[in-house]
Length: 399
Ligand code: C5P
Image 1 (cartoon, rainbow, N blue to C red):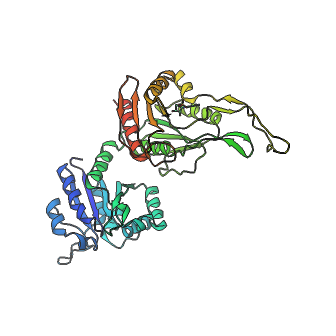
Image 2 (tube, helix red, strand yellow):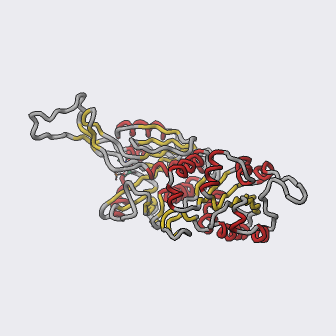
Image 3 (cartoon, rainbow, N blue to C red):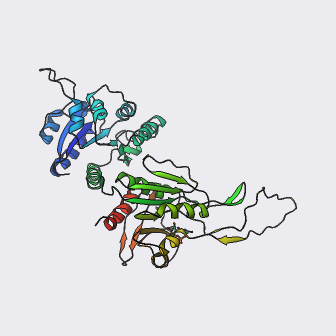
């Protein structure tokens, strides 16, 4: 972040004291930082501290009281390579989401030309309130990066999610943003996600517990780095935040096979994160199967096409990344899969791990590469895991 211009917006929460530390980290890493503080923010930390650390007078009012000098939010918005609001209170988040420009921080936000990042800080009840969650969703849709609050002890004495992420982690997110922005521009990526449903009759199917969260997070992460992303999604109830992702909805493994192969034709990389059914009923009944007079039933299943293997057969220059969710002999099985399907990388998560797998928000992975290298990662949120996977892909794709 050397030489980068960062506007650090500080709003009025107890976590404002940590903003001084964040500011120091940014300055140490070579950034030029302009602090904009809300009137309430000044109740928690003094402009003198922030001005001394940043080497610039702190901006808070539209006009300087003694000279009448106008502080231009427009100029600030143009100057900034990034605006970071830390801490962002529920009130500031609400104002940002709704364009209520009644202080210098919000007017600067509305004038910001480049990326904006927000590190929320509030009590757990405020964080989980539908109003806050709605505003956060709006900000995400507007392209703002949210540095999720952490769980732990809160200033209120309660324990839960809402405390501002530690300054080191926010600085890391900023560093990552500057390293990654547009790093995959022009690269075409296809991601498969979610389960498949194999129809038995019009109302019943064979499915699995895949939530699609991992694949969606990977697609979002690729898109945030400027890649041209197609997401082939099985039946899931998830929405994409990044509107640049092209989403193709499918139901069965056969549909997913067709859609993925078509999308992959001119792709540089395909990530197969879907949990594809291996078998489908030989036939799907046109009418609902009745139980009257039927005591036993045999369902005959036939093999589905293997999307990963099909792509592996005619691989070309494409980078192929598969997933392996194993219950036993994890590493061994993952290695075998990589060979058999002709993949370049395989992401392994074990069902034995309580922090990994279906329906969870966290995952613990290892990435196994073709050359035999195995890299293990600690348990992280699926978003962070997605960033690790995309980092590994980027290292191969952009040389
Ligand atoms: O199911 P299996 O463990 O073999 O899956 C390993 C990888 O192959 C995963 O990346 C999965 O998305 C992919 N796969 C596929 N088509 C299938 C089965 C699995 O693309 N029919």
